[in-house]
Structure formats: C-alpha cells, structure tokens
Amino acid sequence: MTIADQVTGSTIAGTGKPAEARPAEAKPRSAAPAITLPAIGERELRLDLFRGLALWLIFVDHLPPSLLTWFTIRNYGFSDATEIFIFISGYTAAFVYGRAMLESGFVVATARILRRVWQIYVAHVFLFTIFLAEISYVATRFENPLYTEEMGIMDFLKQPDVTIVQALLLRFRPVNMDVLPLYIVLMLALPLILWLMKWRPDVTLGLSVVLYAVTWEYDLYLSAYPNGFWAFNPFAWQLLFVFGAWCALGGARRMSRILASRVTMWISIAYLVAAFYVTLTWYVPQLSHFMPRRLEQWMYPIDKADLDVLRFTHFLAFAALTVRFLPREWPGLKSPWLRPLILCGQHSLEIFCLGVFLAFAGHFILAEVSGGAAMHALISLSGILIMWGVAWVISWYKRVADKSGAKTKNAVGNADLAGGG
Image (tube, rainbow, N blue to C red; front, side):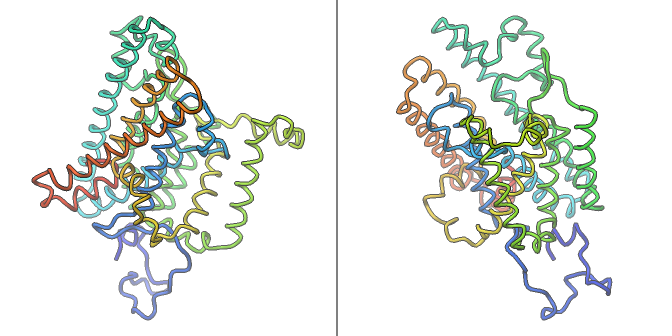
C-alpha cells in the first residue's frame, strides 16, 4: 500500500475494502505513464532532472539578455523555469512530509516542516547579506552607482536600519531574490495543506482553486518595501504548489487515463504551438497582424506576479507531454550526460543561492569587460560548471565525508527530495 493510497483512501469499488486487500489477479494494469509516488529510498530522477534544469535556466535568465538567452524556455511560451521549480517543490515536499505526517502525526510533521522553513529562511538572510556586500563593493570599487539602482538596493543605502528590518520580514528584496520568500511562505502553509490532503485531497485542490480565483477577483496581494507588491504573489502561486502536492499524494495516479488520452496529447501540443506563435509576435511584430484584436485584448497582459491562467495552463500542457513521453524508467536518466543536471536538482537550495550570486557576478563582467555573445556564452557556461561542481562536492560530502552518513542514508535521501539536507 503506497502513501498515495493511504492519503486518498483508495478502495475497491462496490466492496468498501482497501485496495491492498484486492487479489493480485484483480488489479488493473496501469493505463498510462504518470507520475507515481516513489517507494521509500527510491528517487524520482525526473524531478531532480527538471529541477536542475530549472535552476540552470533561472541562472541564464538572470543574466543580461543575449543570444544565449534564446535557449531558455521563456522565449517559446507563456511559462518559464519558475513554474517548474514551484511545482516540483510542492511535489517533493508533499512526498517527504506527507509520509512523516502519516507515520508520526501532525505535530511531528509540522515540527519537521518548520525546521526546514527555518533552514530556507537562514539561507535567504545569508544570501541577502552576501548579495548586498557583493553589489556594494562593486558599485564602490568601480564608482558606478547604477549597480545599486539596477539591483534594487538604493533604499538600503539610504535607510539601512529600516531596510534590514524589512528584509528580515521578507518585504524588501533586491533583484532576483523573490523565489525564496515565496517558497518560505508556501512551506509555512504546508502543514495545513497536508492535513487537508489527508482529509480530502480533491477538496483541498478545489479550495486552492477558489483562493486563486478570489485573488484575481479581489486583487489580494502582499505589499513590499518601500512600495509595490511581491513579484510572486503567494495567494496565486500557491495553486501550482498545491497542485504539485496533490499530484504527489495520488492525484497523478488518478489522472493516468486522462494523461494517456490522445485527445489530451493533441490538445497540449496545439496549445504549446499556439503559445509559441504568440511569443513570436513579441519579437516579430509583423506576425501580430494575424492575431485577432479581441483575442489580444482578452489575453494581455499575461501577468507573472499573479500566475496568469495562461501561464498555468501552458505549464500543464508541458507537464502532460513530459509525463507521456519521458517515462520514469527511461534509461537516459542514468546517463552521465544528465548527471550534472540531476546533481544540481538534488541540492536545489544551495545551487539556487549560488546561482543568484553568480548571476550578478556575470552581470558585472558583461558590463565592465565585454558584453559580446562570446563572453556571454563563456560566463553562462562557467556559471553552470561552477554550479555543477558545487553540487558534486555537496553530494560527495554527504556520501563520503559525513561520518554519520551510513546511519542516516535514507533520511538524507528523502530530505534531498524536498530540497534540503
């Protein structure tokens, strides 16, 4: 009996008996490849792969625009790497802490989640401090105050005391530091989400949809310092996080027939092609003449802060095709060529923080040394290699250097699935 079965309470239709009581010969065969809940100690390498890919893409997207940025997915549709990262975070967090809630109870699971939230918060504060020092040093050393303005720390230099307090409250964030505060808030809500999932998973997802709709209808948001609002509205982005948790706890298994349908496949392909055409009109204005005006008026603006429904639907189409054409047993997941991506995905918190630091360093080099395509490619490749190298060192340390690794092997592996150690 899997955790997904325990959470959803799967029973034999018409008998009221639990699914595991069904005779082996009566069990139906899986109708389609779908995301399933991994067994204890077994990694879902597809999640690691795509989370690592999301981290690399986020790093490249944080660099100044260049020819190389055309290799990131945000130029070919409505969604980008952020959706991938938040969905996988919800999936892995629900898998790890959902099991803890079922085995140890609500209080113990909540304590573990709060410990993880504290780790993320400390990482955010540490990154904030290093990021400020990096920007301030560069701006002072090269006598270029534009760096402080461009990176959004001008208010810190004017009122450092007030700004630090606001930063600790997650209300002040320099450029490129918006994802971790969103993740912290979503993880704080995870105990309630898992408790509701244990009760009624489909109802929980429905409540998430209702909150998303209310957010759009009544313009709910969290304010930021000194003015404005969060770049990623938690009231809207929670939908993607909860959807990931719902998939991990049995939702993906229950959707297997829908995901296997050829109708779903062709609808997804058609939507991705249509989204690609729309994005082309942003770079080739002549193509916009073929876009109906009413469609443009309805569609724009495609809001990222509030997770526009077009972005969410685009991610769903992308995910549906990925699940269909990239099975869990795909031999390529064991390929050494994909090992760097998987390693980065297994240590996402550390690699994300490193990526933010490297992105500004690359931004500085491109501004002060050379902004050509060759230098941009060199910086992007160097940054990715550094992220891979750090991920390898962290993995090696947990595997070899940690003397207690043998005793906590399974616990560490599961914690890595949730993005921590």
